[in-house]
Image (cartoon, rainbow, N blue to C red; front, side, top):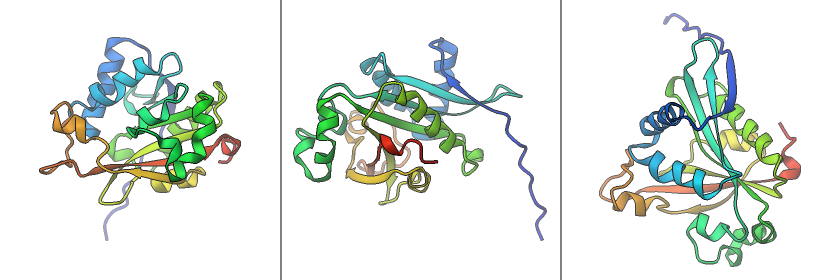
Length: 213
């Protein structure tokens, strides 16, 4: 019988990431390990600039050791910004995306993306804590809906169970969402074969559900 491995209790703190070079370098390094080389430069840094001043990075740290344990990004989409975000010409006219038409026109769609946790702490509630903290940050901007795009491979999104437990519903799937960055060599996805094989699954939550825990 194998001995039981005890996990050290976490003294966890979640705070906004300061715009200091050392903080961003640390986030970029964790992003590279989790998602592949170039992801921070193509998927995170541009959105911090594009969606300012509502964009914010939050980081989870071990307060005893100061180690970075995870992070996520959240922001508000601008008026009629959903099509650009989804990389579709007219999302309001397509199936389930039409449910977001009013929020898109009113610039009231919040986004929580790039939920990242170090490998050995997955499954301990850290991603959930990050999403809840991001929801609190978004609530200050008065969103009508919150969108949570999640990476999927082989038809499965690892974040689905956690998001479902927080009251999110699956809205749509965008096949090969990161293909352009991969094809151009700006992002080196560890799952890529001869072509992009990763999809983006969008999860959706109405803000009246933000209090559901």
